[in-house]
Length: 383
Image (cartoon, rainbow, N blue to C red; front, side, top):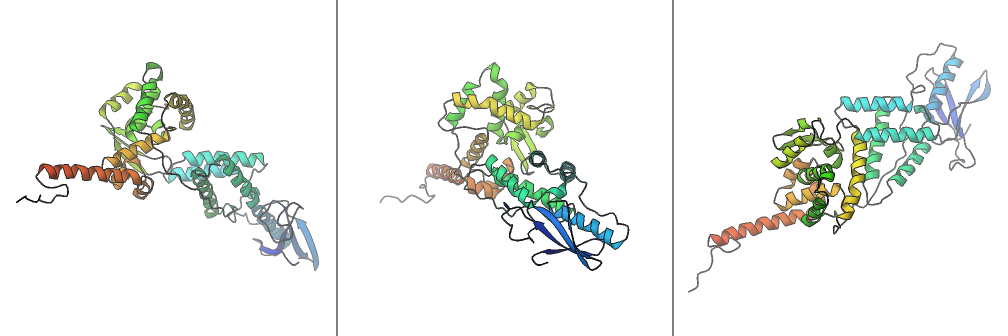
């Protein structure tokens, strides 16, 4: 009886529950450890005699279902319909979660992607229902994600794992799982210094796409260059977001609002490019369009022979650095691109200094024309 946990059933009776570990299980010496993929068992007394019964599950949630069922059987009373996830599939749970996020006005682009990824992984491991998900299974999922986003200097793993954590937190809050099965994993990565193309690099790229055949790529890159929007937000850009020369929207990645002014000629070019509501994806799935555009741009960037490796996201870096170098404050730039002023200050320190230096130089020149020195002090008169 030792080294086992107690679990109470909804009917009242309590049971000692434990795992029958496989020889390969790292917890094989501890029968009370339940968060593994080993089979679960129940131990109890009936008519004064010790009894054992398999729970026919490998998960804690499934074990709770089995304990409640056995409790009702032993009590001799008809079971009260339990609120358990034994019949809820992972697919149904993801759909409910996405519907909840939509109702809360939260973006579902990344959430939908991770929901599909989780379903595919569970399907490959023959896991269909919520109660079949174990901590051990989610540890394996974390390893798969780590391989998918294996660059140590990338925030992608941290961002996508946070989405998974949000899903399971919601499941626990809705009582769809008795406890959160996610392992306590912290994602650490070293954020590299931002590498930003200069005006010459961008000019080379625009020369490559400056022809009728690549007109759509030219317009897409010009929109990135003058708006600082992320690639997915540019793909989804719609007519109703453009008011005069201002683009207003909500970032897909974070849900943050942004508002930025673009040149009038670019607004005109966008409206002339298509009659559809969305300029770049029309009725197509934006995620698929992002994939197609990134694929089409790779040979263009390569043939431009730029000094650094250019990606669509570096157009956003270019825009932000330019605004800071022109003297806009971090708060003003943050409003333009839909991120926090703290993140702007942390990522673009060099260009903030360049902007301040430019303002100082301009002010010094004004003082000199006024007969003062470069610090604004009266010049000493020579006797």
